[in-house]
Amino acid sequence: MTLDLFGEEDLQQPARVERICTQTFVLRGFALPWAEALLTALNTLLIQSPFRHMQTPGGFTMSARLSSCGDLGWTSDSNGYRYSAIDPLSAAPWPRMPAAFLAVAEAAASAAGFKGFVPDAGLINTYAPGAKMSLHQDKNERDYDAPIVSISLGLPAIFQFGGFERSDPAQRISLFHGDVVVWGGLDRLRFHGVLPIKPGQHPVLGEQRINITLRKAG
Ligand code: MD6
Ligand code: FE
Image 1 (cartoon, rainbow, N blue to C red):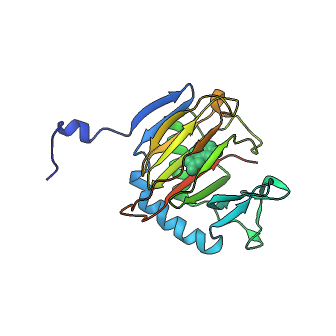
Image 2: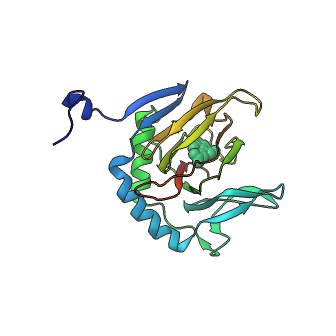
């Protein structure tokens, strides 16, 4: 028996859509129906290409740990940021993009007005409490016409979404387990980041936040 405070219709609404900028949408809970499939696929691909800390070209260690899947994975070292077909850790191609990742990417992009999105790169970040992502632009992809689909799982995060200069003011948006952010078009090169994750325990993922971003990189 569900607690029916607001009427059954409200409980059966599809994901709530919040438009946070011209071509940027937060789809609340959109990935929840796929959460188990996403996490099962993730566990398998992490055996082949485990999470690892990346070094920035400036000599810093990123606080989130990263892996990738698909034709292209994202790597960073003293030579700079780039996409590569080979995982430098395993010296083999990245794991295939799981079907569940493709399904969420296509459905979420479509819900945000970007039809026919087929990503070739899936970046996976895990954040322990305290880990963050400084304001940055995603500009290593070849094709800025394609959107980016970003899936949040586990502990909540405060996402910063700014302008076209690092110093521009940024909105702060809380993202929860199952939320999906889609952005593209006019907003594709906006600065964005994640504030330090607050300590906590997520019932499914424990003491971590996982973010999966799906892109067309090549
Ligand atoms: C994160 N996300 O949410 C980091 N980039 O953990 C990103 O850097 C990001 O969420 C481009 C598009 C969506 C994103
Ligand atoms: Fe980004």
